[in-house]
Image 1 (cartoon, helix red, strand yellow):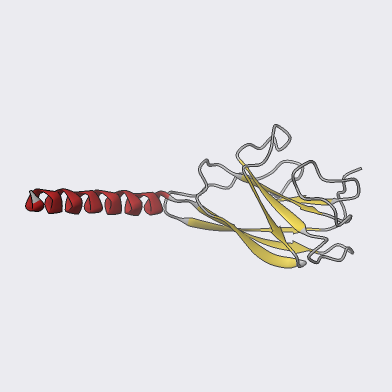
Image 2: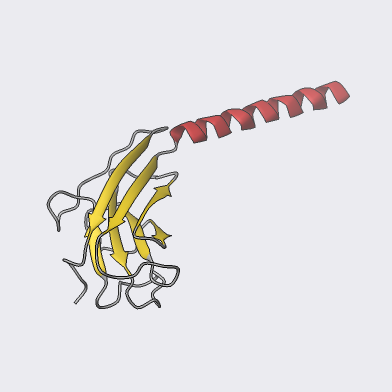
Length: 144
């Protein structure tokens, strides 16, 4: 009985380890290097929010994930991206009161990953890989 239990436990550990290894090999990661060249002060209260979207229509619902920066230049990492292509947008909070749980407030500076805004560029990443993209934005486009 003990031998059977040990064998069963050993097989369970092997299967679990195999599933965990396969899951990490399937993860997609997107690193976003952000540079804000606008005039606003970026700090712990006035953050830059970076949103990950699963559709180029960035108004069709909430983003898949949101990360924040408290400096004008930095990197955020989205691990375990489930759906590609993905899209990235940025918003600077000039009010110091926005928590990115609603649309950006009036006066927020906006940016996105793309060569031809307002059309975002798709970000594709293969399973088990990491893609790095850059977004530089200023005060040129703001929420009215």
